[in-house]
Length: 386
Ligand SMILES: Cc1ncc(COP(=O)(O)O)c(C=O)c1O
Image 1: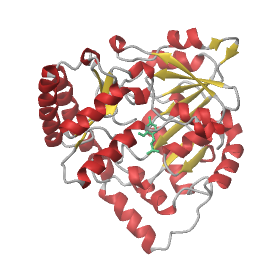
Image 2: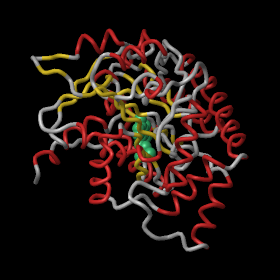
Image 3: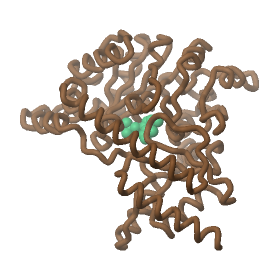
């Protein structure tokens, strides 16, 4: 086997989810607080646009960069939200944010190149890098500082063993900590030199403060974004990368060879998500609901003695400290699943810096979160008796 492939680790949350499905197949009812997948249906105009596209025969390959209408709508969205002007020719529409990540990492990073990322970080970043022979250089962030990433932390790790990092990955709001980067810190990170890869997939899911786009601070950046989270479109597989113009031809060649284009039906649906006026209200209602769940979940976890020193203010995750239980996060997550039928994600999925933590997703109904907390309470009572 290709050595780089052999080094790829499991996306642990998927392993947990699959075990949860096996329990469900045995007739047990599992509460899912592990998976970062909105429980909402997509806004109705999205599904209507998809049905229309199928009916109208919009089912062929599209332009490899994506439908011109969709790319124009993405530009309009970035102009409206961040006041930045990007050209449709800088955008490659992809089948989810994950392929956008693969394309961006591939054109930027090769054998031996280092990319800085926070620890904790989104589980898949290091694996994408390892596949390319690049080196993930992790930068520890701390719970007491809300897992915030700062220019000082980056500056201290920019050069290591004489190798200067080629890129820095920023994810604000972040998975798994729900941390929103301070505006001045984000601007300073963008000034430090290496090209910024800004994963903006949780933009819009912000409950306090405002998410900034890297494009507000620098042109030397790749923006990754997608429709999975904000528009509850995980299964539709639609995302995009906005790249500096000089990289677009290379990105396009990769897209043509690896994927040809993103799915046509999903692209028409994505266009509706960005342009149908009623979608804004639908999204605002989802965000208000997430916020309600967030407030409840953080309070309950604290009551149960699971530390969340800094309040998460974005995405739909709480990273809770369980170090006092004295057990590694992976075996703890499986034990909670097996004994309490509650799915949670082990911190170790997100790097060494999240060992001793569990991630709880509040992309589930308040009712289910309440039930999940009840189960966790009972589990912890028995845990202390063991
Ligand atoms: C930070 C981050 N980036 C990217 C992705 C991948 O999203 P997509 O479904 O668009 O491939 C996820 C999914 O959980 C994520 O958390």
